[in-house]
Image (cartoon, rainbow, N blue to C red; front, side):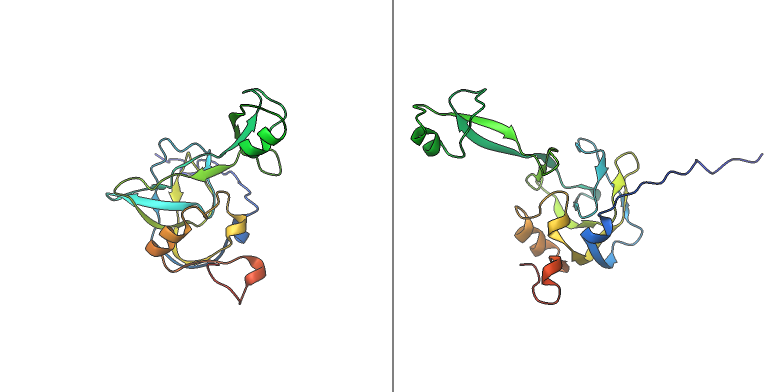
Length: 181
């Protein structure tokens, strides 16, 4: 009996992959299939931090980024960045309002959460992959442009670099001059 091993092909175009991970030097041979249960995005983007706990690899947890602003009420249309600014504008008891943080395109942004207890940083996802097929190439030695990462590394950068010291975070304009600045 002849079976059809061709499950159909599908092309996924992720235009930022080559500018996020600029140089792959070394990674985990064969990659790993990630545990994605509870991960809120439909894809794991290139440059996403990968963690490992008890032999199980997964994308670093993220949550929707929020910003706190202050206004006269919870549904205030005029808001201020600080409660002091709201008071200076004449609002006696400003109310803290949590709003989603949006990017330039008006889309929700995400932030890394805390490293789960017992987990460790192991590398960076090399190419964008679908959550439905989470087979990841995990880079632990290479160059990443932090300005192009889907989720900012800044909140965990020092801890990540302590665990994975051969990843270099380098902005395009710093090529050849600064590393991990």
